[in-house]
Image (cartoon, rainbow, N blue to C red; front, side, top):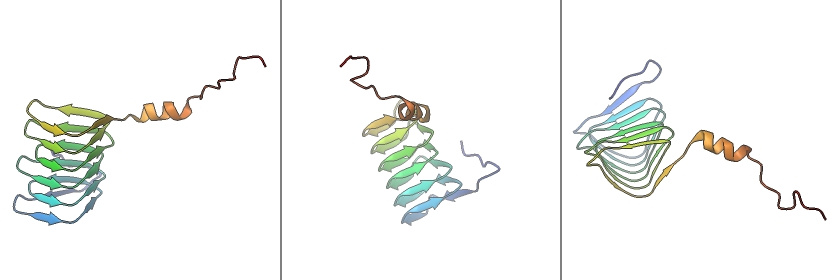
Length: 132
């Protein structure tokens, strides 16, 4: 679940802590408490059962077990556990939603390989192959 990698720092928001304001973090973030504001994380955001985030989250990875009221955008994988509640739009490359999770919003899956294919693909010329 919450593992500290050798190249990132980990921060914990305890169950008795409420933060009002935006959070920018380079490492991983574990949330037991409440955050009122947006979160921008270069690592893993983990919300535990009973935690609340009122704001948008942009991260590389997300493991959600708490309540989020805002959009969730992940460059890689998002996992919504059976106790998760997400009220907002979801954007990720890989999405895992366990039975019992609550999700109310739009869902879009993105893939870097698909985006690169679209950028490198040739646009068809309607005049190509016709004689004038």
